[in-house]
Image (cartoon, rainbow, N blue to C red):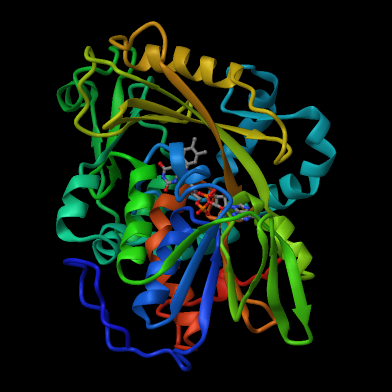
Length: 429
Ligand SMILES: Cc1cc2nc3c(=O)[nH]c(=O)nc-3n(C[C@H](O)[C@H](O)[C@H](O)COP(=O)(O)OP(=O)(O)OC[C@H]3O[C@@H](n4cnc5c(N)ncnc54)[C@H](O)[C@@H]3O)c2cc1C
């Protein structure tokens, strides 16, 4: 195994790839691709990480930064499905669909609704527990101790409701079943926990095992730098397609010419659909757009991320300011951002935290790579055995990435994966 030159990084475990002479090219330097790349390198492979932009500049750039082992509830739940029609009609609702895209979204929405059935919900939640269970331990493997202390906070998450009783529904049962620590709070306890929360909010839930990163983009860039420091390569190129032989891709077509490849990992987030289709694989992935508004807010001091549990957005105290992130908008991958959504998000956040300034200072739109069952695809191509998939992490990619990266390395190295991979198969639909 190659000497590990990343300063202070944890010593890799002793497993060897079947053929360390082969290189691996990871397409997509978001949190998933970067985590996979570093795990692959630490398993002894020569790794090249390619992205059309810089590392961490896709969906991993501006998300809410929540690291959420306690958030094990798939997006579609029976109670939530009943609210969908009302949300779709409400411009302030947390869900919208670009109507011109609606016919394309229907098959995905139908599958999504089906995944909300109780039996599937429980099964999918169990898979999320396995994947997202120990993200902080996972990040400790990808970062030095000082990088971890700089970037990560194990702070807890606070959910807030306007009703005097938390309306946690099925989530409570799923968390109890998974043994996740939680503490329900009355009005006084909620106020004591985070005094900045408006008196309109009257009950809360603390998930003490959750936390956040102070800067998701810097987190990805740091992991990519650790890869380079240990001899890996990061290339800025857009992959346009594949030159395939009978056994799989031999060459990538890129906007800067061709690149020979031996093994390929597709980790291109919401853009993975097109690349997978080039290799004959159709996946039901929807670009589920979300927005953030960031602002310097000296009047609001938060110890931890606060979530409006009914309106479904999160406010995270990050190093660039307070980040208000959320909403779901199903639209074409190439459609322009609709910043009216982020303006509404800010208005709602001011009702949660009255000390927020009148206006946010920056806004952003990102595309969650979302599967109908809220589970990513982590698998090997059925025919082209030199192709691997790692995308579809939806609302929880920052949480699931470290374990996903490890699983990719295990698959590529031909090892028995450390968790049951059945729920993450590419052909499960
Ligand atoms: C508003 C919002 C809030 C969120 N909050 C949280 C949260 O609190 N906690 C959490 O766990 N998750 C959260 N998420 C989800 C999380 O951000 C995503 O699941 C995660 O970032 C997906 O990572 P990824 O690496 O798969 O994709 P990306 O970060 O999008 O990376 C994919 C990369 O592939 C590159 N790429 C695409 N096509 C090509 C190509 N052809 N050639 C080369 N490169 C290519 C892109 O440039 C991009 O950098 C949130 C998402 C949003 C939108």
